[in-house]
Image (cartoon, rainbow, N blue to C red; front, side, top):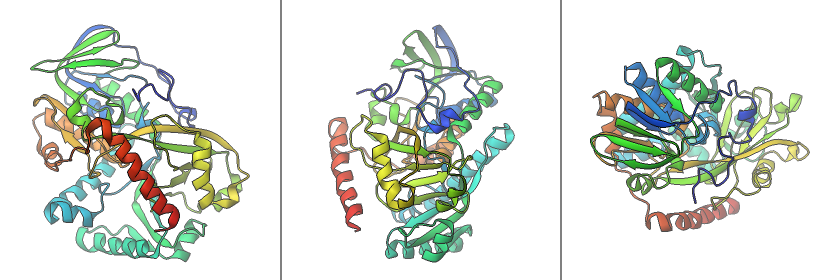
Length: 434
């Protein structure tokens, strides 16, 4: 199944709240005929757009091809959360890679958040970065762990922006009886992801990059010069950046073996007006501790944007039904509220939840993907890191590449059934309260 076309209309954004409130609907031409550039980029999400911008600013000729629209994939549909650090917590990183590497990875996470804010300011992107992400814990042992991590980050990493929350303190922000406590990271935040992607695209074009839409890549021939064939054109370049994430398909099996696409779903309610205080009393985002995580925030016009629910196939289910159930478990008082938008999208995870930085076929092809739900910040940084590597500054790329993201067991044939089995097991643990 080609996930680029399995659930969406060709050349159109998902029917999301983000698409309905996008500040730009600029359409780019298809790649037609023969083109040549210093660098070709496949994928018009955060990673590809960031790479295009930073390469163009360095004077490279850049051509980017996107199968649908700029920001079409996870970059334009996600929960908009800009988290701290990496997808794994620092104690897990210390255990896996040692203290020195864990500190480097933490600093990369800080750099990623800073880059998001810097791009918004430097290019006048009409997006507000709202500070604050709450981590809401379902169990008391999770509360203890979250408080331990807040103390650890302050003591060992000099990061004192995570505030532990008791149950009553959490309820002052998040009026739900479902959670036992948690923490709030005042240095993290959230934004309108599609508008952020579109803003980076416009900045890249202003810097000289050329972006093509509705240009589905059929094949990639490697060698000293890379040849990319689309439906209607051919693009040749000295370097290739793969920024496809969950939509890579079979373009590069060495990447696909380590990066698995999964679907996720979000709904947007009608504007809540004064009832928004029943959901959140600060303009922060929330993620809880379920394995099949729930995450939510309020939009600029006080809609609840709520993501969650279980689905183990690649075809989208009834999204409203899928997401309404966990939403009402958190906020049962919203059962009378209308759902105005419902959409799904495909992200990508790795076995160890660390991004996969790979040179899959020679030094002139670079790939970064598998951000495992942490891609708003890390995807943007990955694009800059690949631009730096092409410019001869490969230290950061090589650090991430050294993390040695493992292949999924069973290969492409078995990875999806194995994931479904694992998700079913962990979803059952969620329901049993384990």
